[in-house]
Every structure is written in structure tokens, then in C-alpha cells.
Image 1 (cartoon, rainbow, N blue to C red):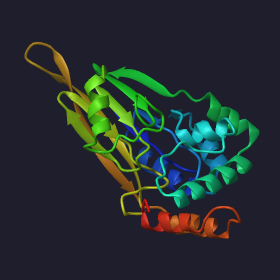
Image 2 (image 1 turned 90 degrees about the horizontal axis):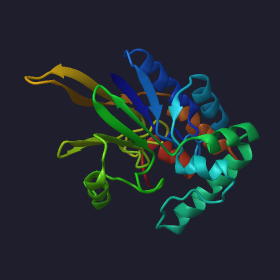
Image 3 (image 1 turned 90 degrees about the vertical axis):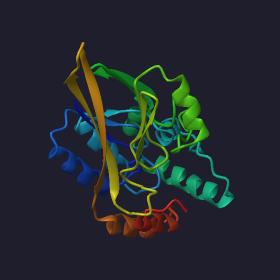
Image 4 (image 1 turned 120 degrees about the vertical axis):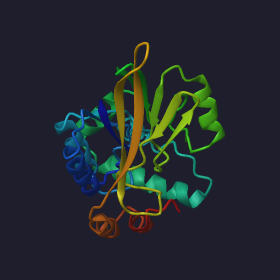
Amino acid sequence: MKIAVISDIHSNIYALNEVLLDIEKRNIDITVCTGDLVGYGTRPNEVIETLKREKILTIMGNYDEAIGNSKIVCGCDYPDPKDAEKAGLSIHFTGKETTIENKAFLRSLPKEVTFTFNNKTIRFVHGSTRLINEYLKENSKEADEVMSELVEDILVCGHTHIPYAKFYGDKLLVNAGSVGKPKTNNPNANYVIIDIKNEDGLSKPHSSVEVEIIEVDYNFEKLAKEIEKNEILPNDFARLIREGSSK
């Protein structure tokens, strides 16, 4: 079973289109999105409608929750007041731009989904099992705490915009990274493929798991220029897109 996991598209239709084309080439069984379809970029409706058209199983992210419920904050942790102010402008633009129908779609998204494939149970969330906006950064205390309590075999999340995979004993934590706003100091879109393979053991069949982090080139300059022409979104968002930066 090969599962493609995309996350944190953030209204970047150009990155999403290229990632979906890449997924088509890789003999994927199912594609899952771990949320944050909207925010930051210029094309929230196009992103939502693409995921709906492609029938991609999608989890609610904190930005999706905010826009779907007409909140004025995204629920992110911004120690710098300037970053919080920019996020507020993002929420303002996205809320104004997103159609009533697409807001209803965002409200309808589940906050988590659990499946079993090839004897492995996988739980998909946006932030963590505890909070939709909790960051499970690699090697963090929060990740240690969440994984120590995990019942399932694999936990898949997003929200940090940095992809990784790490075992905690026999349990695996996978972060799907970000399609539309990576924070890897690289503007390329990224996503992960989780390959769960059945293998014959000495006593009974068991499964092995492999995770591959994929980078995809796309025309990030097109989105950056759209942001700069936008009358509400901060120009600094264009820099973040060009640099693949968090600051």
C-alpha cells in the first residue's frame, strides 16, 4: 500500500497542481491531505475545488477551521507581534476571497482519520493528537509526549511545514511537510510517500514501512508576483515563498 500525504497547501494552486501530477506518476494507492488548504496564498478557491474534484481525503487544518468558521485568528503561535499581524491580514484576505460553498466544505472536514493498511494502523491529524495547532517538531518534547501515548502504529501530521520521519520504538511519526509554503530553506514543494509492505515472517505475515520525502519543482515566482500585486497580503509572503523560509 503506497500512500501519498500532502499538507499545508496554503492557497498555492501552482504547487498543488505540480505535486498532483508528480503523484500520478508514482503508482499511489491513496492520497491524503493533512490540512491547511488555505491562508497566505492567493488562490484558496482553486485549491479547495481541486481537492474536491480529485476526491482527496482531507483533514481539517487550523487555517481551514478559522476560515470555515469565520474566525479572525488562525490559531498559530506567533511570538513576534509582526508575524501575528501578517497572519491576521492573511485571514482577512482568505475569508473575503473564499466562497460560501467552500467555507462550508472547510467546516465539514474531519479533524482526524484512522485507517488500517497491511496490518498497520495509521492516524492522520493536522497538528497533533491533542490539538489542531500543536507543532510536533522533530525531536521535540511535544513529539515525545504524543508518541508515548499513541495507540496506533503510525501517526501522520503536518503543520510544521518541514517533512521528516522518526521511529519512537516500534511506532512511527511522519510529518508530511508543506506543498505550498515550505520552511526548508528551499522553495520546492514537498510531500511524503508512505509505503507499507506485506512481508512473510517465520511465524506470521508482518508489515514493513518505508517513508520517502519528495521535492517537486514548480513556478513559485508566479505565486510570489501575485502576492506582491495583491492589495491585502503582505509583500513579505512573496519572499517566504521564494526562499522557502519561515522568517
